[in-house]
Amino acid sequence: MSEPSLFTKIIQGEIPSSMVAQGESWYAFLDINPQRPGHTLVVPKEQAQRIAELSSESRRDLMDGVVEVQRRLSIEFETTDFSINVNDGPLAGQEVPHVHFHIIPRTKSSTSHPLWNMSNKPSDPDFEALTSLSKKLQSY
Ligand code: AMP
Image 1: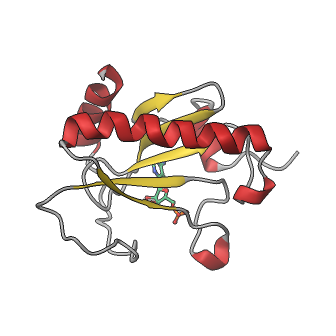
Image 2: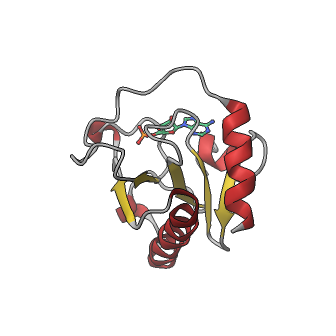
């Protein structure tokens, strides 16, 4: 068994996170350095670096997690539109070696072009804002 990844430690509660929702085989929480407000990560509880390395059950359930997170973000951000991104391996820019979907709500006030460039993030996490949004999204 490989070392637990950062996201496995988050799933196990060893490292704190701002939860959005969870299912039997997936966990969703707010990105600590959001590209836009509401930027959420959906991860399988099964630890694997790439989508292809996951069991087919985890892979299928993960999509249910993505849609459940979209449902909650839709309520808070009053939108049906999202940028969804997966960096599937280090050469694709993956920093944490554990499959994760980035879900970013898009609104009229945000720019209309796709968010391909994920590198211009603020560096100081706003924990108060993350905790407050996490509580709201868990209640939906
Ligand atoms: P990637 O570059 O696709 O591997 O994305 C990794 C993401 O994990 C980045 O957007 C980070 O901001 C995010 N991240 C790293 N550490 C944490 C953490 N402790 N809690 C929440 N998000 C994190």
